[in-house]
Amino acid sequence: MARSSIDEFKQLQKVTDSLEIAKKEYLNGVGAFEKGQYRESVQHLEKASALVNRNSGFGGKVLIWLVTAYEAAGQQAEAIALCEQIKKHPDAETSKQGKRLLYIMQAPQLKRPTEWLTQIPDLAAISDNTNQTRLSNTNLPRTPPKPRTLPEEPVDLSQVNTKDNQFIWVSLIAIGLTIGWLFWKSY
Image (cartoon, rainbow, N blue to C red):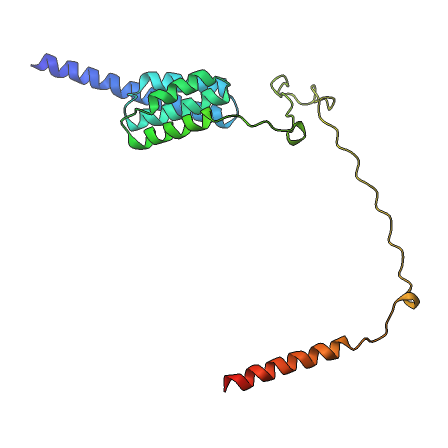
């Protein structure tokens, strides 16, 4: 009897240790994703998903992040396959998120004109020492120069028509009559 409780304790200790490792890998994967290191994020999240119960709430969270990391790393086939599995997840929220992600990934891609896009240079080749390596502007699209504005010419006041056309008086009389009529109608 004592032997079985020792085995149960060891088994529980293994589960607890693997859950702690899974949490660390999950946090490392999320951190790498937020830094734009998608391949590294995939590696950490794959390790976390292997160590955690995939049918648990935390397991579902790991899988959702793994789908997102697959998509960001350009591994569409793996992302879609994992979404198909997540659709059947026992946790309702995880299943719903899996369905939404699958819908988004399978949506048709719209064609965008090239002038709508901004090319981002690949910064992976740049070392940490910015004094030795400089970013070249040759691959960046050039923007046309701003048009020069001409200074305004001063207005010649002798040319401005200042003759009173009586419009202001006509409009004031019309407003007065309207207000008087409304006041008279209210009583």
